[in-house]
Amino acid sequence: MSGPPARSKPAYRPKVKDAARLAAYDVLKAVRENDAYANLVLPGLLRERRIDGRDAALATELAYGTLRAQGQLDAVLQACVDRPLDEVDPPVRDVLRIGAYQLLRTRIPQHAAVSATVDLARVVLTAGPVGFVNAVLRKVTAHDLPGWLAQLRPDDPVDAVALETAHPRWVAQAFRDALGGDLAEARAALAADDLRPEVHLVARRMPRDELVVESGGVPGPWSARAVRLPEGGSPGDLKAVRDGRAGVQDEGSQLVALALATAPLDGPDALWVDLCAGPGGKAALLEAVAAERGARLVAVELQPHRAGLVRKAGVRDVLCADGRRPPLADGSVDRVLLDAPCSGLGALRRRPESRWRRQPADLPALTALQGQLLDAAVRLLRPGGLLAYVTCSPHLAETAVPVLDVLRRHPGLERVDARPLLPGVPDLGDGPAVQLWPHRHGTDAMHLALLRLGS
Image (cartoon, rainbow, N blue to C red; front, top):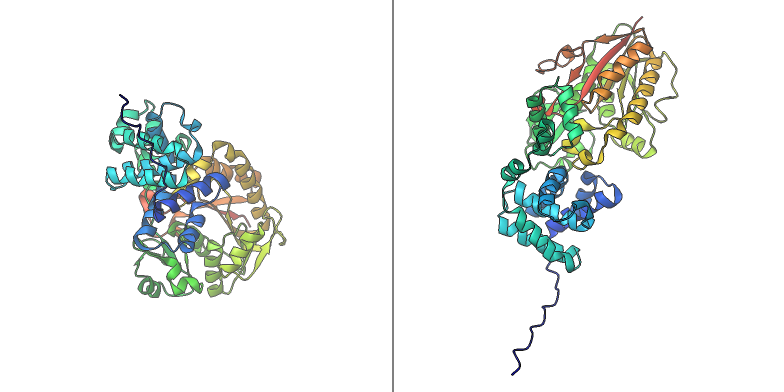
């Protein structure tokens, strides 16, 4: 007697698309395949696919959050996979990361996170890996994030802080070094760096009070031109931003630009230069202040598309040229801003993929360029002129070291204490340079050294 007929396996059927999770996946894919910047890709996807409201908020949280936490998520996933994680197909890894992020770093219920991620896998992957995704994510549910961190905690204290705060070890070490070796404060700085940042606005050509009213934000605590938006605020919807009277700019960036503009200067004060001006935020602010004082700002930017962004920001006098060889007369400039190309370690919270993209091997080329640009800036200064050397990085190789080197090469340079130029801002360090921090000031980790060329 024959047994019952064998059941045929159900046909593979992709589920209905989940707009928010699919958008998040496509952002991760663009970052992985094209070295794209998430904060440039996602807004276009949301507009193109008409994703708004709660779905847009979820897509943003999943895309940016997953990218920001990637190393931490990978450590957990590796514990749940029986082969090296880098041998898992990249699209499958992206789906697993999105699922693990929901399970470990959001309040989405476990069953919903697993089910929705498996449905995403059915849409973006072939049939084979779907079961694998389901099995791995169910292993992830064995612990919450604190439980996994306790289980995976490395013996080395810097490694442990790096895992806990979702940063590469070398970045955690750089923060610790910049904070004088204080690992507890480095942990606080890295934890603040791992939070979703506020949106900061700058009032360029309008009173700040008007911008507060129009935006619904609150005055920034440090910069007299800053406004901080409530969570969910959309700066692109503001008329003042669209017409250039205001802009999106971290309050720390405002502070370092305004410090140069307000530093006491003997003699003429007619020509200011921003030597690496793209994309134009600091240049636009400096031009607004220069115009109020009857001075002229010249913005120099090497890359044509970035020079276009500077013009779009409202800066009138833009030179598309190499800042190492600017077409300006030596000894002719009163104030120079050198916001040097750097690793960007101070703004990782605003660039979610950058912490895993940057490598220590990037630093030698950057520091060599910083030195060349500093030499060019010094040549531009007239006797008594001021130079603000700014980096969006606290790494000592990009802050203290280049300044010491340029002082040695140019004996006529002298340091200026920058701390009095940020009135009311606490915890600026021992001087004369200034280091801002996300955990102390709610800003990016901007560094400012102010130098004067002797008369």
